[in-house]
Amino acid sequence: AQSVAQPEDQVNVAEGNPLTVKCTYSVSGNPYLFWYVQYPNRGLQFLLKYITGDNLVKGSYGFEAEFNKSQTSFHLKKPSALVSDSALYFCAVAPGYSSASKIIFGSGTRLSIRP
Amino acid sequence: GAVVSQHPSWVICKSGTSVKIECRSLDFQATTMFWYRQFPKQSLMLMATSNEGSKATYEQGVEKDKFLINHASLTLSTLTVTSAHPEDSSFYICSALRDYPSDEQFFGPGTRLTVL
Image (tube, rainbow over all chains, first blue to last red; front, side):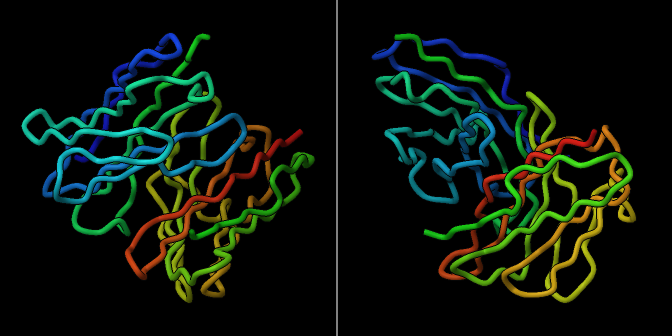
């Protein structure tokens, strides 16, 4: 069965410090991997995705994620956190070759950046 | 970029009434749309896949007679919560699949439903 895990419910980081939000996945075949951000009472905003190619994917707002096939991980990173990055972050996977496949979401990680 | 809208953004209704939520792809056609439900402080759970011109495909455990989905055009899918009850209160999010130039899902802003 396909699944995605975000082991941390909350991550707290001081502004200016690097941040990492962890994600691991389990899927047969080659997955599409995504990161989305959600602000309170808002829908999801796309940050980045991995389909194939370079393992380091750069996305919106200075975020990047590294695909690690051997560890089945897709951790989200940013070199220097901003207070405005505080939000709920979802890792997601779409099994197979097409993003038309059902997207399976992780449980979410709340990122809190303190000034 | 591709834009998906939802209407209404929030709705309050009495128990026993029906509520219709619209999902529109504003600048692309979508043969496939998805409906998700999100409980407070929880992740998104896929409810159903909406296919233009055909019946929706519901996930296990989702009552198709309670959550009616209609995808009558390539830019519009509707979700009707019939005989709503307080336990149906939730945040409902749709996404639309854009086939060209690359197949990618775009999410709507969500609809907050509160059933009194």
